[in-house]
Each structure stands twice: as structure tokens, then as C-alpha cells.
Figure 1 (spheres, rainbow, N blue to C red):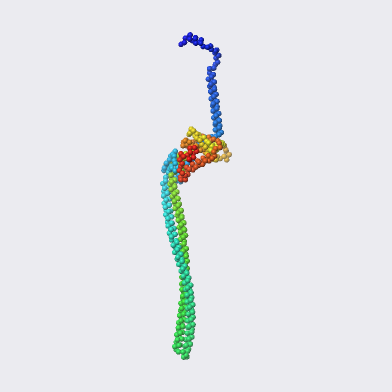
Figure 2: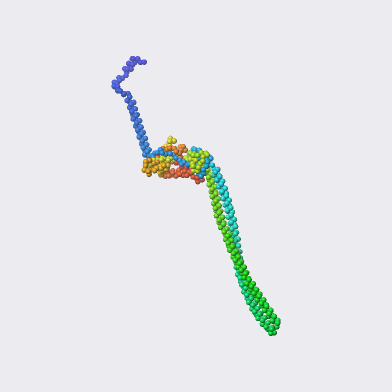
Length: 487
């Protein structure tokens, strides 16, 4: 503690102080208040600047971009259903969220009824084959027999024609011989009668001379014998004439033989014609063979159809993808064409933005897009592939009908497809996620958009063509991480 002397000394050493000013109320709080006011003004100015900057950025965003929240991640949902068969589901090999590869069996319909149809079709085909073999055997037999029968008939015809020629010659010769014999016999009768007449005159003359004694008895007897001999020769000549005339029956017989020969020729000709109809039979059997071959082919196709039905009892995945919904369960009855499950290909994900028609100006294919998805903290990037040629209202279940006179203008929305650029988060994308889309205005890139549309179409075709028409599924790891193309 200092003494009073010390205090006095110290007070004497201090310089003389100026006169204290008059006291002013609140003078001690003035610097703090000014600082607070200055800070407040600075904060307000900064907030105003930030607001202005935000409004400028928002305005530039609105002016230079088309923005909408009506956008979703979409995919080509494939509904799997029995193609040609119906029946009870006896196997289910996948469940929701399972990954399947193209060609995998996802479910199976009860195959027993269709296997029975296969057996019936197989038996019908075997019966058709046996009938075809029988017809072919008949065809072979006819092809072997008909030429022989035709040859035999032709030879018989040739023999009949030779017999007819001989009969004709025989008729001519017999007719000539008979007529000549008759003429000769008639001449002999005339000669015999002339001799008889001379012998008769000689007999009468010698009888008269013998009575007068001019000739001897012997001479008279000789004349009588000559007369009798002449009569006998007349009778003989007449008999020969009668015999010659009766020979005309030989001509009749020869003519009958000729008629018979001609009949044989006609009959043989008909036999040849009948034998040649065997060629028509061959053609008929050939047609029957063709019909039977078609029947076998039809039976084969029926068998193939039945076998295909058995194959269709196994429902195969047409694409590689993810099962997202099962509509049926084990034991349910599945009808042809009714979906039993749905899946989609994760490589075919894209965004569809339903953009108001008032925001279409400035949007062009190939334009860049910012995609804010609620499920991700960082935005995705994408590009416009195409702008649809019609609004979504054109395909609504209840389309617009303004002809009644009641009309309220509603801004229509046009679907815009956007390709999402691949990055490490691509496998986490899900169909149906909501997206905030911001499309930058500009001329775009039409060539890129056309190539991207072709690329997406080719990808869909690649994964959806029937097996055997395309190479096996490409490895997803071979896709480019930016544009989704296959390397």
C-alpha cells in the first residue's frame, strides 16, 4: 500500500491535464453502434447482390434453358406371356429384381397336353409315310408292268394284222380258184354235152345203118357204147360243175375268216389302247404320290407345330434384363398373350421429358441437358435425341374433343427423349425415377441425334431379334462409358 507521500510525489510528477470536455449523453456507445450499422448495411448489400446474382442466374437459366419437372427415367418394358399355349404354370425360375439373360427360361407351362399332341402328330406322320411308300411301290410296279403290257398288246396287234392280211389274200385266192373251177366245170359240161349230142346222132345213124345191113352189129354196139360214155361224161361234168359251185362256200368261209381276222385286229388295237391307258394310271399314281408327299409334309409341319407348342411351354427371356414385376404365381393358369411378368433392359434406359409447348423454342436434337435426379446428389448429363411429332394428349385414354363448343386452353406437352451419358452411377439408375430436366437452348447437333437414335434402335433390335439371327448378347462392359455405344 502506497503512502500519502508517495501519492503526492507521483501526482506532482504528472503533466497538467487539459480541461475535461463537457459530458455528452451516450458518447461512449457511438463507435459500436456505427460498426453495427455498417455491418448491417454490408450484409444487406451482400444479400441484395446475392439476390440480384441469383435472379440474374435464374433469369439466364430460364431464358437460355427449357426446364421441366415432368420427366422420368424410362425403359422399354417387355411383358412376357405364353406365345401360343395356355395352361397351368408348373415352374417359376425367376422373381422380381432378378437379372436374366436372353434365352433363359423364366417360367414353364404344363407341357403334358402338348406332348400328347406331339405323339399324335408323330403317329399321323408315320401313317402318312407308310401310305406314301405304298403309293411309290404301286408306281414302281406300274412303271415296270405297263411297258410290258403295251409291248405284248402291240405284238398281238401285229400278229392280228398279219392274220388279217393272210385272210384277205386267202379270200382273193379262194375266190379266183373257185370261179376258175366253176368256169372249167361249165366248159367241161358243154364239151360233154357236145360229145353226147354227137354220140346220140352216131347211135341213131348206126342203128339205122345196121337195120339196112350197111354196118355190122359191132359197129352199131360201138356207137351205143360211145353214146353211153358221152352221157356218163356229161353227168361227170355236171357233177364237177356242182362240186365247183359248192366250192363257193370256201369263199364264204374265207370271208368269215377275214372278218374274224379284222375283228382280232380291232380287238388287238383296243387292247393296245387299253394297255396304253396304263400310262395314264402311272400319271394318276404319280399325282397320288405327290398328294401323299404333300400329306407327309403337312403331317411333318403339324408335328413341328406340335413340337413348337411344347417349346412354347417354356417362356424364354427375349432380352437380357431385370425382372421388375410378376403378375402370376406358381400354379396359376396362364393364357396365351396374357403377361406373366415384365422386364426391361438396363442398357436401354433413357429420360423422357414432357416439355410444355411454350418451352419448345430453342430446343433442338443434340442439345445438352442437365438431369437432376432426386436419388442422386450430383446431376447427370445427357443430350436430346429427338422431339416427338405429336403431343402426349393425342394418345390419352380420353382424347380431347372440342367440337362441342366448350373449350379451355391447356398448354400441351411434347415428349422429348434424352440419352443419359454413362458414368459410374449408371447401374444405379432405375426406371421410373423422377427427373428435373434443364435443356440448353442452341442449334444442337442433328447428325449426333440421328446417330444416337440409330444406335438406340440397333441396340433394341440386337436384344430382341429371335435367337440365331444375331450374335450373342454383347458384354455390357464393352459399352462406351459416355455414349453407350458398343466398342
